[in-house]
Length: 122
Picture 1 (cartoon, helix red, strand yellow):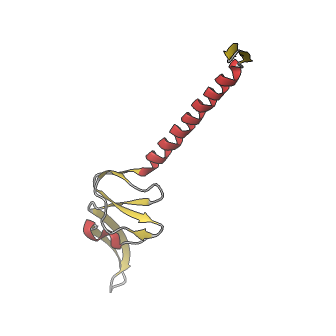
Picture 2: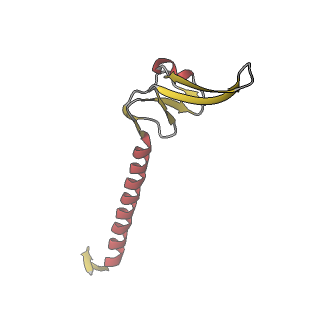
């Protein structure tokens, strides 16, 4: 409660030192939460069979990102694009020369080449 400094008794407020340490702890916790938020937004996971396209303010970076975990600029956007073989099916009813309705099934298999994936724009 009291401290002797150069022959004088000074009153020490125990609540004041405890409050400042609580403030430091709260500030450290806030800093840790902000740091964790920035780091979590900087980590990007590209799943297998996909390629990541790095986009910062509309400018696309030249090399695409392979599958895995990457550390990127938190302000950048990473678009995940599938490079697996995909199939599009379409069924169409068309008239023949005789005027009869003919059912046509069309199937298209395609895949994107990961080397040229950066030419795609959003």
